[in-house]
Image 1: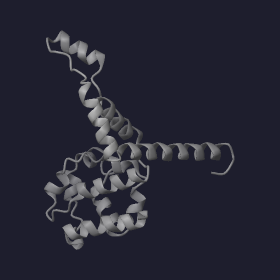
Image 2: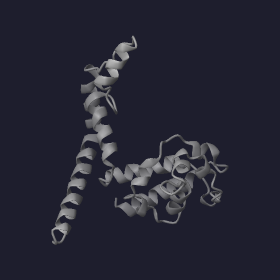
Image 3: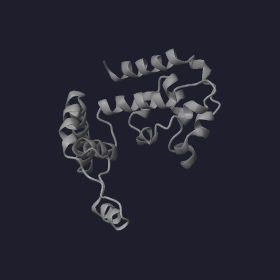
Length: 185
């Protein structure tokens, strides 16, 4: 299935959940979104994501780093008078982007850390030292679950998706270097 077909599938899924005309662009999702508030709606704007999807222009969103700013807090859904599942839509778009190999480096790094250690950000030595100073036990890094996480990542094809993302990034880097050297990509 190509990208346009997948985007159409995502738009149809949204249309099945709600009447697509029910999103009357009131802006409740934007005002409720903590990321939109912090960025003044410049970097992340839930209403524009819904509109782009409904208008068949969501392909433009897939390469945007701002797509990954959603915190999945679901405040947009909670405040939407029409119950448009914006956060679910964003997750669908993020999944498609990652299938295409388009995922920010920090997300890839966190996923790799989770697979390797069970932590998105493993506790640092300095954090554990401070915990001991405060009379708290250090946070252990469990060895027993690492194999299970790797097995799950492999079974769910997460490892192959990570490989595709890295290949995509390497190809983009090579194309950029070729352009900088005056060659063609």
